[in-house]
Image (cartoon, rainbow, N blue to C red; front, side, top):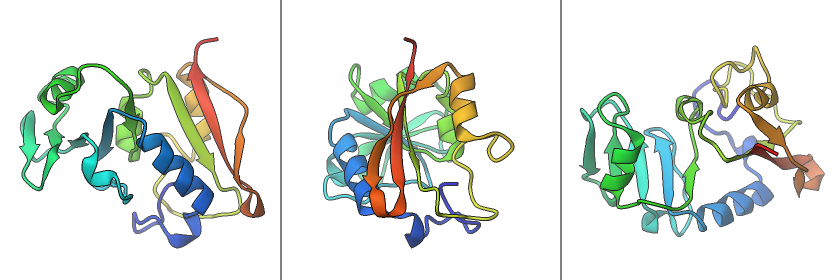
Length: 169
């Protein structure tokens, strides 16, 4: 789960090691993609180019509240067209969710970093991917051709890890 039953990321799911890993990763990308309810709240967030998925536009449009953001309705235009509108033709894209957004890109990921906090329980929460909890996040990633690498410990006291899942060899 990536949020509780109210669709809010609770404090018990926030860990400094995970936050530092996430922030550093976003500082290295050329474009951030997320749903309208997802956001990141780091000092560099306003500087990042982003695409926000929404049904409030027919295809693509500038975000009136953020000059670095493009609003994108996948039903109206391709992802490539949205990237072009955002001014990004090449580079690294970070998809930060939510579950519908993650699901759209399952067959396109070169790499997906899955954080796990095994001591946290969020009954009735928002799953990280479509198909969870009937299947595990790991099973879903594997079914889309991704293979787990070695996990990294982010917070030993809480057993929080992040595992790279990569396409191919």
